[in-house]
Image (cartoon, rainbow, N blue to C red; front, side, top):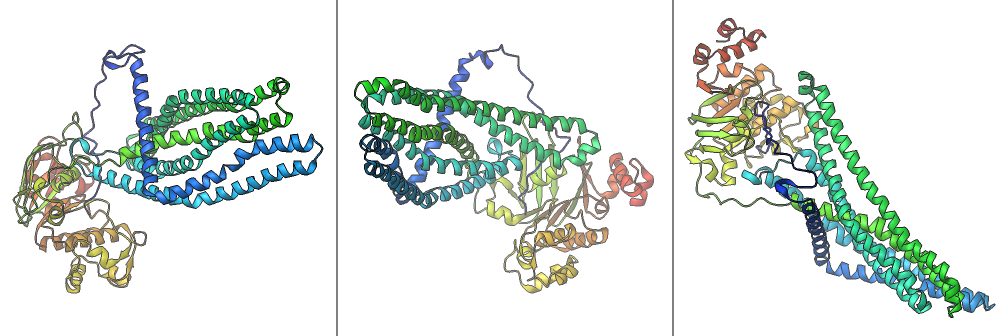
Length: 632
């Protein structure tokens, strides 16, 4: 009910930290030389690689039997790489060149049988690969969701401010990137290692003099690939950052379209959106440029040995190497080594980069905030009374306070209506009052007990917050209505339905045991379901944050009267000023000094309150006392 991400109001704009003095090019802040950047990049690479290695290790440790079977079938699938060159040499020297086609066919047939056996063995690896990877993917999803939710409700520096778009990007693209890359590493890493060992060993057996021609370019290519890794990790991380920022900017723009149109901020919004698109494009091109360099490494590691062997063939033959042996070495290089190098540099290398960067980001997303001291489980609010003592709240250390030294005392059973201009901090007050946000200074007391000392379960039972968006989940209507009060008797449930004016809705759904889903209800009907859920709870404090915005005036008044008859305190964040007329007291937030009093007292003493009432009654802001008199 009360799980809602609070957004800072427009007047509580977040202040950016003033820019510091410019530093010369080639230096970092505080005079750190530019080589410090390289050091940090190296540390970042080591951190990302460490995270990826731990991920692989944990995945294998959790599924040891599957890992052993995967290793066995991978060994069998590498058999063609070991046999290919020797089979070609046999077919050439003892078959075709010796005029014995049957021997040649035998050599080629041996290679074909090994190839078919390797293909069959490769097929057997996939079920065991899935046995390792898929549970790890599920665990990653659980960890990221758990960490995101815990940080969303944390207080202090551990509180997360990731947008929904960033969370979705992590749960979709980045988790899938880790899943695919992890599968690639487990499936292809062994194949690459075994293939290289087979090529070098086979070359040593068939033509020992050609080993250096094959191994030297291979070692140089691997060294260059290692040197390129830091830049590749940096570009991959920048690409992920740009993707998250673009997603966040897109969601922010779409959700703020009404404000953008109202304020005439089309050019500014378009500029910010295009900047995000341009940044994403630049990072993607930068990542592609690094990928292009990897193609040169393939040429060096795979094509250079081929060229060197061809150029050295006359000399090798003169020193006793047979023509079949030279053809066998060429077969090792062309049919086995070249695909393995391409696999490492373009496939396995890129896969490792995605795994390292995405795993590091997901590990941070899954991080749980530091645990707070456990509240006293024996403390329970005695009733629905509430007090705010010198409460100050701001959305950042440099932000203008939304609430500044607010004092407020509510008696049990009182009905308070909070009014004020849009964006003034009414929803923030609702969040602070219910413990969704912790004040920067001051204290919130509920039922005579400091709210921060009430355990989570007791706090959930003591107060209910209904946000502006009504939540209805798929299930029966009874499950939705009794979510906060399981086991509610049918008689009590029927009385609540009548009190809140839900009889027609219940009949249309086929009774309280009828199936209900969010898509099948209007916004007003969803609000009624959410209101009934709060009405049936045992909470002594109910806070309605514009929770009746889609009900007509008559339905809203009926709901309001039902909650007044219900035991407990009600705080209503009003979207219609009519609610203020019927409240015990009204709190006016105006951005400077909050004013608290009865409806009539505020009409007499506060010009802004008269203006708000006049605007509602006459449709003209500043209508003054004429509209206010009619409102009274």
